[in-house]
Length: 417
Image 1 (cartoon, rainbow, N blue to C red):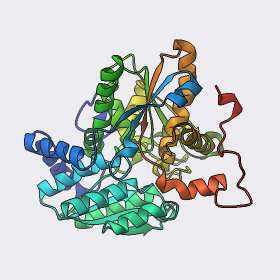
Image 2 (spheres, one colour):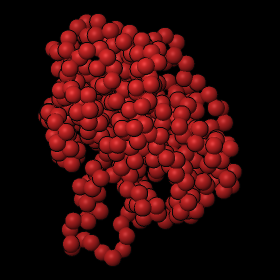
Image 3 (tube, rainbow, N blue to C red):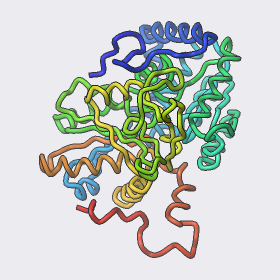
Image 4 (cartoon, rainbow, N blue to C red):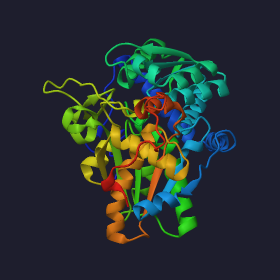
């Protein structure tokens, strides 16, 4: 199980490895968060915002056509239907409400796919806060729609050109900003990584995903699913789903990392599968690194999973064996995106498509063992509007010379029912 032996420490992972200038701010944030979560008025306001403004609880949908194809019952937790189009709004509204309680007027955030940036800009508009979002320059180009949304919502978007110009470098720049402005600025951390208290705080603000799904599954089917699944970059949507099921030993827990071009090629973001323990962004966790301990660049077609680290609780769940983490390649994810679009009329975010691809692969194994009553619950963490540019390029949809009458992204023959 995911025991937390002391504040922010999960087994051999977690903790706080930060510049001295931020220690007092992190201590203050920890105290403010603990006090807020113990205040019924704060919790009630948070739940009211999620219900009336953000559209929670998100539906649990039985994907019948997809189920027929894999021979098992497939349930989708529809976080893509949340306001702003992803699970990120849960975490951000909680952190922004806490910012208001602490009396700060400015927020900063990092973003990869842009979903956390859009959610942060939305929360800032809702609460009347000044907002600056750091985003890798590579990601500003492949997620241009979300950049436009952030601008429209009133946020300043700062493209980060350093390093690989992706999520890791955006976090670095946001931390530099925070060191210089911590007296009046709150950092809305976007994933369940980083120094304590961020991994625990992000988990708790997102855990409604799993709490709702567990209750919905019991109410509708009278039993828990045999397995739950989510994509994992930093790991906020996954830990938000997993937490409610960790004490259910008969529920298998599956996380799917970005395998990029294939782990064997070195161009991937499979941090748990191919990384080693190290320290990244203030926490001890699995990190992609070279023989000298230097962080190496990750790769994924998915901006939201393109990160060389992972949240420390995921590192512990992997090391303890409670959760199983596997990788999904770019090609497998894009095939799953097309398959879900054709089968159910749902275009998922590319991040979520990794969960679909990995979970369907495992579901076929589960169906062979348990039959058609086998149930797999997948968190559909976001919708794919933001990824249409990538999809157009990948499938050749914008090139009249490549467009045919045949559907795109046909799944491999061996994965057919």
